Length: 417
Image (cartoon, rainbow, N blue to C red):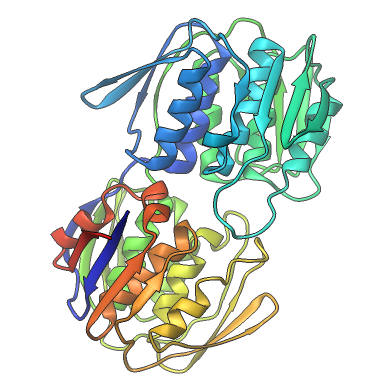
């Protein structure tokens, strides 16, 4: 097991390239189940979660071949339908296999997913929607068992927008009989990215990026080639890091239009941001200004950047209010930030943060993917050395993060525990 070591106090300077989006790569890989043959996927990041879904699908008979710049996913033969607990327990996104397996094989057995301990995820919304499409589902010994002799299009209304739920039903619906309407659908960029891939496979989808998606089922899907969008959460993490370290960083291979709410808050903190077509330049201020943030579904401020922005507010001038409206347990990182000298008061889904002149390096424990990133960012500005333990969480969603920060001038390295 590794730990991350960081000696703070160095402003980040230089250029960094953003990897492919984890939350777009996983559904893209799952979508390969929908048609027999070889798919070509480009810009797939090297992450623990990507390795996990590959292992699960390999057990189902899918073959993966790595090439320079792309991976080949051959779903010519799907021999199984079960995703075991041993693999699924580490990654909630494995539920994305439920829809495409039902569509391809008419059967699926998926262990109830694990992953970050940040609160309940509405898997029940996936199951309710698939049942409305004609699937027979039941829970047994911690597994979701599903069968279908043929899914049928219908109108689905999600009580709350769910990204993986929207993606699951999109993949289930593209080969269903008739038309499927998803109302109150998620609008995140990863939804549009999946829709683009499915259309390249021959699917008929309209309305992606809005709260109503229409899908006309077809039996004519074929393998496709797809380029995964850049990771907006990684780009946002670098933008916040540049601001809070007083750095000057150009973030390449990103899409600023996916980061509008984040850019607004980074600018409000005092940083100067220059946007180009596929890059951002962020120059941090001498003093961070306090900014209030409320997480919201896209295009609002993303919950996946709440912890990182809170780390920034820990060294801001004055008080700031962070409101978390997506996940109920997403303040677990607060106790670890307090170990570094942060002053934070929690009241329900609100965190009141009083900025300090400087944080102090300390041994801290990562509790989930984005919390681990917030602790790394705090370490970049803390006095002394910070040890971040359990960074396997970090490796689930960031590709070579310490190498990218080191290339920007940070004093950061891994050590074996």
